[in-house]
Length: 609
Ligand code: HGA
Image 1 (tube, rainbow, N blue to C red):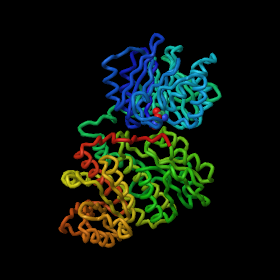
Image 2: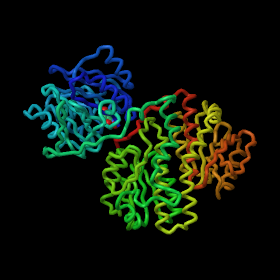
Image 3: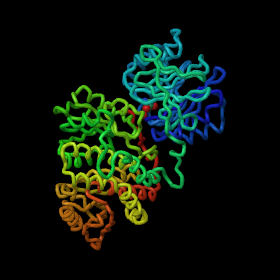
Image 4: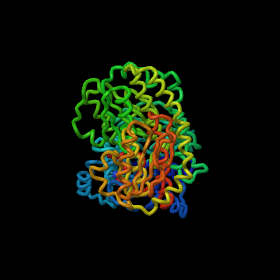
């Protein structure tokens, strides 16, 4: 997390840097700052809070200059305050940083012995001092950055200026994203392409350990050993419109309503009435997937929930064993990897530090191959995977994931169908599943029409402190995702359970103050779920049931609400039932007046461990 923008241009860059930071606020928003180098002087402004607070401080006392660096922070070392906000300045050096320097404490002690005093608690300031030490040895800024990063353990993306080298910014990355924007007579650095879309759509993606030097005239990449390296220039397909909020009150609401299109885009040209196209995982995809005897799916947060749904699908239809694990656990234990297991990484951004590290770790563990399911084609996870299937959700700005989840489910459904077909799933069954998947965008569109009813329902939750979510089978992960959404944006404590587990503990919590939200699709488990709901009713709990139109559920019982959802089939029901749960979390948060798109303490793309 943390977002970086930097520029080497002729025009005044502070307004461009601020606009870039606003596009990066999904990465962190507890403080922000920028610094501009002009006439051998660095001017800096920093403020606690969102970018707009820093912008106000800048506008109160603006300064010109064509070379600058800027940052929006998600604190890891030191509380969010102005002193810890970036850019940090030590000696000749001004720096912004995304990541964590693991050996910073030892380095800080050494630097203090050399006479450096620190004005913040950050690991970043230590890096600035180290670069300054290297500059004192007569190295150029580029050489000093190279010498410094060789001494660092941990992860970083940085942009650095030296007071003595006008018109120049040096960037470097390891384990955190950074790319170069190529303009006309100007160059930029940014944490992602969206931050630079206002100035250029031409980008150069840096490899791990790359160092880059930008000036107005050129951008030159170097490898860690100091050798110049050639990197391709890509033309990004992003448009500035894709990140506008339009008529919606929040990005999250916009993104919930974009789901029919995002899912349709994810399915487009990958499936038709007769089946899933064979080559959608890349040239070697079909051959490699035919050899798979099991899958390990690794992800974090919402993506982890998508993986849990996929386990039901792949085991049911392809009869392959699947294990799903959160990446931060997987990477630090010795998982047993049976022969011919496929490693599947799911990540919206493709830069999630734990998922990326788990994928790198998997290389050592003898998998048949790796598959990335991801929304950002140029991301590290995608670039490092053997096979890839892109979700086509478009930029997701709201910190709480919505369209990323349903497009991940769409991609995973394609994977399940592909594997099932290869393993001889009966033709009629296969075609029925394909037909269901093709209906998914329409079914989501229908589910969105529940919004007015959900707005009314949300009133019941505004003053609650807790909620329980229940589901069975593939709808247990949907319940997990619904409870995560409610927690993230409304700050109501919510937990999800497989409905059959209720009587093994959580039923003790149920009373008239505990709303229970149940996901009840039509299927073989419906009768069992109905019994679980009776258990709640019998204890006076308030029930909200999202029930399939075809399911017979008593809507008249006291203290209960039943909302009808047309799931359009058992296979796609998890994706469809997710939508009303997203809307519920959204409208509860709106009524509670929380910061829906940027909930407290969170950031979207978690590029630190
Ligand atoms: N460690 C630095 C940068 C934090 C960061 O990258 N967060 O995601 C700090 O705490 O300022």
